[in-house]
Length: 62
Image (cartoon, rainbow, N blue to C red; front, side):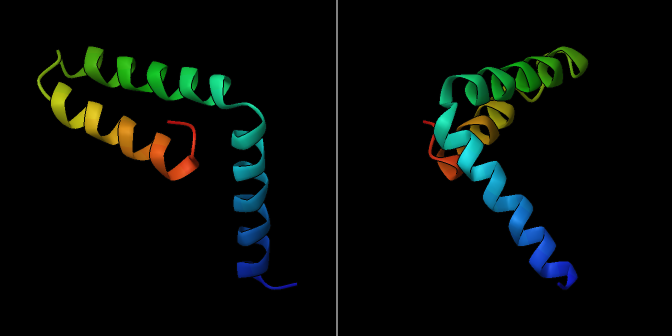
């Protein structure tokens, strides 16, 4: 099994977890965004919100 096969397997497991636990995934994404906002003093709140939305959309948890 090559490196890319291992990466694909990890990504597939992550997507499966997200599909089975969307509320947990959304909580983690929101918490990470809150930490980023806190560390930057909210200076990049718009970009952080956009990134959170993109992550949720990519994982199918939005």
